Image: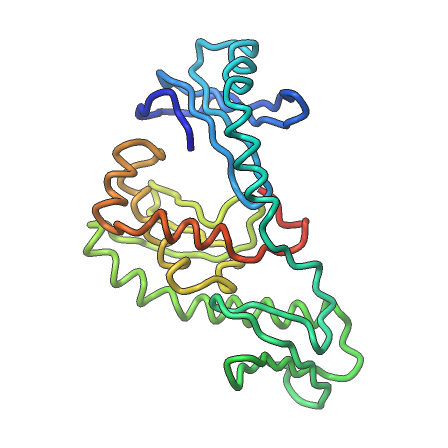
Length: 252
């Protein structure tokens, strides 16, 4: 993120979208002192946090002065590898915990299931006649179960380090975030897509959301806490953002 000056923000009061020289910009007005510009993966979504006193023209000017930096960030995201939409057939590549696997679809009687017999093959066992969407649903349920099994140890490891207690971790598909946090309820939501990412990437997102229980905003205090708890967090963030992205229905 690029900013004029780091300041702690309070309550979001207004959201709108403007276009600046062909770039769609999400504008969020808050009770803050300074303007912040961010470009987010996977496709380079541009978001500007704006003090309440600034009008649209001032926001446009601020974005224009940063267009070079914004375009460089967006071009970097666009160069990332992307998976086309999966057809759920033998020979496709699928990811699990940061590793790429070749899918082997086997039609047989019995309960549908997913197996990973070795470091290169993911076996999807389905009944004859199962559709593409049904096969995908089986795989998604397996991803959810595996991700759920990973989380207790990670949360237990980091609760005493961060100094917070997480009341609940939930999993859902999200189009705009890897994770989010309900600070009052101390509840963390994680994107199901994290089942495909490396364990270090998953751990980074969990810690990121746990730190949000202490600090709501991505300000200097938040960064200092992350630096203290996970000094390599920026490298982990880069690893996560470099990982192959799914088809264009996955948007930020």
